[in-house]
Image 1 (cartoon, rainbow, N blue to C red):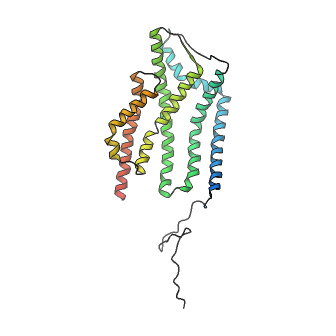
Image 2 (image 1 turned 180 degrees about the horizontal axis):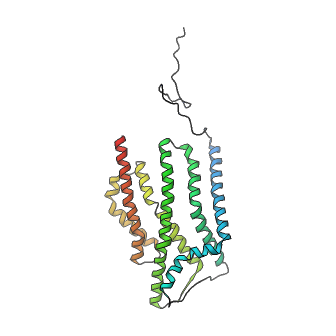
Image 3 (image 1 turned 90 degrees about the vertical axis):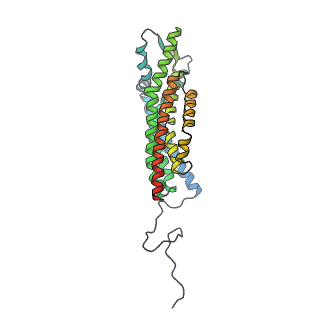
Length: 274
């Protein structure tokens, strides 16, 4: 009779497993450093291919894309019927800058959901089950918040900025002759900038979820956060009028309060479990 005791059951990584407990299986075979680099390379290639497809499609329908991007300007133009207004180019190469701006705006916005999906696929093997449950709603929330911010910048903030500029030019008796590249740069800044700014509450919620900050701290420094938002609005908005600055800051303040509520629920659920 052998005196050796049977080895306790363990998983593939050598961790002990109690009797009756299912042995966990890895989601993916272990990969070396070079394998991870190769996977990252293909992820970036897929992102670039998607971006190139959308840029090509926009370039093919450039007239329709230009009409869509000119909507904030055309919305405000009828309010100033006595004011002459033209968009011009002031150099032979300006039109190429305009085309690049149009393709970049559309390509980034349309490619964003695919980029989030490819990035999620790349990092998912390194996440545990708890983190995997978070990544899908986080990706969807990031996309929804970006679209909300981009829509806010396109439908509300940009037309109001143009309206203020028209009113000031009309008051001073100036003829508005904006260069096309300046207009599209303004639009890209408003749309993409507001889309990025709307990601702020998601970062706050993730920081609370990861234990980097407490909800009590967010509430304690609420007034400081509001002041910072107005300072950012004063720096980011292209016009110095307080109306546009408030229009920029108020959505961020509302989203900050929503982030506090969501973070409070996350903290309460964690305390109940824990």
